[in-house]
Image (cartoon, rainbow, N blue to C red; front, side):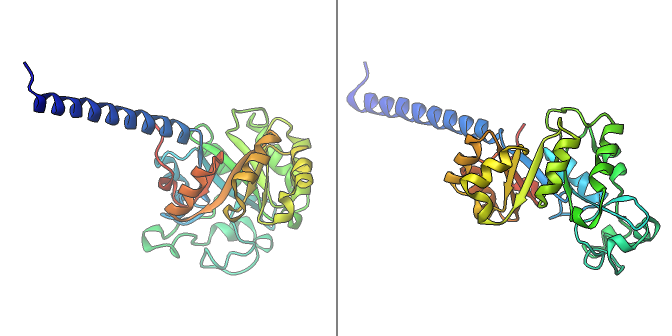
Length: 277
């Protein structure tokens, strides 16, 4: 027979077991919700390797990012290249505007040493190099960087994608975005099967009418995380748009966006978004 003390301990044990089981179930449910969030490695895993280089993109793949984000511009002699700034000054050992340098001149630059001696010799990649190396390994979020500087670049990007049969729906593993909304309207016409995103850090683009206009040609509304709120996410989702926010450089920012129920987090540090297996 159990005495009163033994029955009390037994009851406490059952209660503790139930509490642990409930917490485990809640944690599993939470992880399930997190699994819906895409991790986008901003210019590759650029917190750990020089941005927009093979080293950064390889690191992102190693870290199991859902997408790498790349910035596309054009050399003086017409090659599509991957670099963020309109000049090479900040991220290479050279100087000058991207559009005023030939592909050979751009490729001769060291795009890695500024991040650390172990990255010496990293090159500015070409667009076709990135497509051929990473499609099928990870998603690719293509940002058209300052397309107004490069007349016709939309058609050139579309051509490269179509030559690789990437102009068709690919489970959204190719997405194209830009701050230039007119450029994205054109990309939507050129590649109607590829998801389109618009980037903004302006509140004027978050009004009901602005969002409705964007929903007419885009699939993603991608604001800076300072604009993100529960109300904005609700409005975006009500228009059948997805929302990916940028640029996450702290665990606090990543946690905030997870709480906001965004669809994607664009981050220099893919590991700030909990791993999803």
